Length: 393
Image 1 (tube, helix red, strand yellow):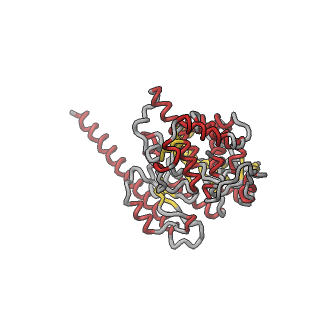
Image 2 (tube, one colour; image 1 turned 90 degrees about the vertical axis):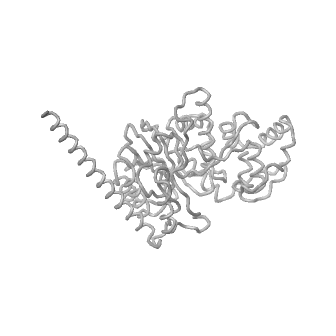
């Protein structure tokens, strides 16, 4: 099905039979000659992280430093931020050193790839973050994916992730062939397409299986590899879709995904050439597969209580609908025990006071924590004094 994403997701017309596939230049540039490696101010991951936040940055250094400061301010000391630096950005050694120096909880991925929106390069970079942590010998209990324009508004995300374990609650489910046809219609994200009227609905399983098989033979090696991973039962498989910002998974699920893809030469490298937000398909689909697998084996204590993404998406940066201060206040009024951040934060320096409001939230959160600490200390002293008086009797 992924071959269709290369054209149909952008509204292009299907190719004539036997016509060779052509990779658009913009996408080809992402896929070709895209890797590089940092030699300093990277790595040194700790041996363990309760939560690893995987994030990708490409913005100006001042924005990256403010973003890291925001995430550090609202997360626990046991949380590690794994950062992929896009090779499309010309960061100097001084820039990289300043990112790395933000905290010992910030780990810079030494491996860099070119990234671009609406390509598989974003999924590849997140997978690179996970693989780099594994190569560094770091164990991570949970992984949360976070976009660089998704900023936190309150602390407590770890307390939400621990009891839920995964964010599988809101994902959309499609039979693999149905997903192909939705793509073929021109827009995967158009939920108004009436799939009940699609022609394959009236066909038998055998006929649908043949349709699926006929398309599979036209796929290239990269697409076949991804299909094999995400649709192991062919036409009977289910594929899932969901926003990646603030999604979270058990670390073991993501380790198994990295290991699975590593067995398929060329798939990770070729992923960047696919014109689609693969991160919104790969991670939720693999997550649902692992969820069902563990439920079947009765090995998952948290399978019955999945959560939802921890980030509230209040606009669309691609449609020039950036975050407003009103959006932030609306997000603050939402459930404080399950929503912890918002998107999309403007990346321009002139942002109408948006980042200033985030800095105010950091101070407010710190004061609230200080007040709570004072209260806890007071209660501890009163308890000790009560114990001392009781001993006199």
